[in-house]
Length: 252
Ligand SMILES: NC(=O)c1ccc[n+]([C@@H]2O[C@H](COP(=O)([O-])OP(=O)(O)OC[C@H]3O[C@@H](n4cnc5c(N)ncnc54)[C@H](O)[C@@H]3O)[C@@H](O)[C@H]2O)c1
Image (cartoon, rainbow, N blue to C red):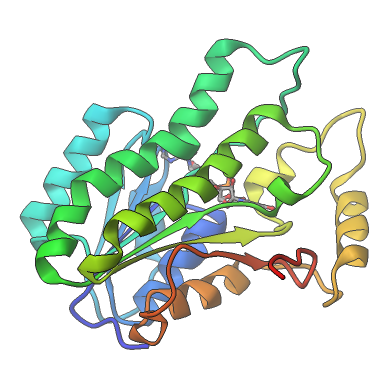
């Protein structure tokens, strides 16, 4: 899985799944640029691996801040080889209570940022004839959860993944999404409802629905990422890879 000399940009990288992505990419030898609205510089200090490490503060929903990150990456490394769009927010929303401002914010962070980063980095990947874009989707799109803005955003992430794969397939660039199930990250744990089920109850229900009956950990997603960005996965594109212990079954 050698990624020596490759540069990877990971958004939402300071904690949770994004941090596990950074750990794995660094261990595989890549230069890792961790991008987060908060805590990116601290997060990269803990990474091991031979490549360079850089933490950049950025609100990925703000185009001018994305531009600044892109400028820094291109100046320092010449291009981005591996783009991992992982930043995400998941406030509870329903038809009754969602505001248009919150709806737009969820789409801006979870969806629009993917477009901004892909537009900026795809030309360098095309010129190199090699690139990997991996987005973080979600198994929520296949469930009966009531989570209006978030579910919509992740369905759009899956569609955007396929659309980008269609555009970039002839350039040596693969575009896929990893769809986690339920992972005990700080983000997930902080959204436990005061009047709803506890995190333990949600996990018990989810684990019971899995074929593999253990809690998912962020490293499960890092392992999948490591494969998708490797040369071994060069014939895989436009896919939504559900890494969820077997909850989701898609296809024929
Ligand atoms: N945890 C789960 O069960 C689960 C399941 C399915 C999908 N996901 C997806 O995985 C991804 C990571 O989730 P997580 O559970 O690790 O969440 P998390 O909240 O623990 O981490 C998300 C990171 O994104 C950063 N972030 C948020 N808004 C940002 C912005 N505007 N600009 C830059 N960075 C921003 C946060 O600061 C944080 O470091 C998200 O896209 C989420 O939707 C998570």
